[in-house]
Image (cartoon, rainbow, N blue to C red):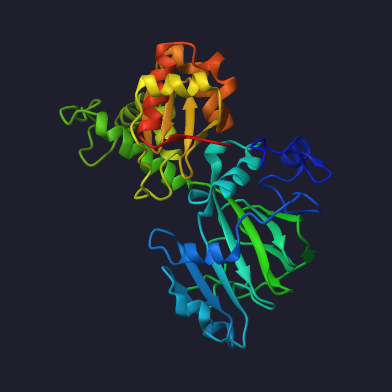
Length: 389
């Protein structure tokens, strides 16, 4: 599967999509993705749901919505062998963190900033199954892999939208749908944040790929930035009086201006970029083991000389970089900042932007010891690995 990002979504160019729809309004895109094979076999998806490090849910649509049952993973084999005469859905989160071909599929959406990409959730549903009317606080592409699913699009919601009484599902009490689509394999539906939607499988073996995007709240932005900066500020620095007023109970305009200046002093391009690089690349699953066998320079040069295979970003690894700061490049990986030597910047930019490099084409970006050293650091931490293809 090609790692190149999409240039068109159906009949829409990427530029048209971003200008007219992205974070603005839903759109149904016919034949948006051409599938040659399924991204994952359903028995493999079920197998992932049995693993303790994988986030999964089984939703059973038995009876009224208030009676629907939700079983959180890790699931057990008996959950799949159970006889049911009612619809059910298996949802597995973050499949791109565990399956290379699913990780490669996520790369198609790098026409948007890759630090926004969150994960791919894959759902398998029987005829009539769904998760109810709801809204999300992030952008999502809903792509039909197999079978058919009916989608209804409703109103724009907010934190004040009334929810049904259910212990484990956040479902809307009132759903006012006004558009309806049936998606066939390869069709996709884009839903911006806060837009209500509801999907129901209208065939057996209905498989949907949900590509979600990170969208931190303003509250998260402010609190995490403050937490990051507080680490580097000496406790010896204390507030000083900005002058006195005749009224001892008054917080003066000078006091307020002094506080604002203290805050402004911290909001520099370097501080913001360094914080956001760490924040936006934090691992979805921090406990995921990414250890690789340590490689030395001789082994690396042997691989390069053989000119065979590819260098890949490991599944579940998040990369981003910035030039904001002291004039150099900083690479962010899994929430950590790695200052980059000037001689290694071409390599760092290439792997962060492309996610995959052909070994026989890597020579121009690893022509010096600094680039090779950076590659070895990333490889030996498990962030990159070599593969046959």
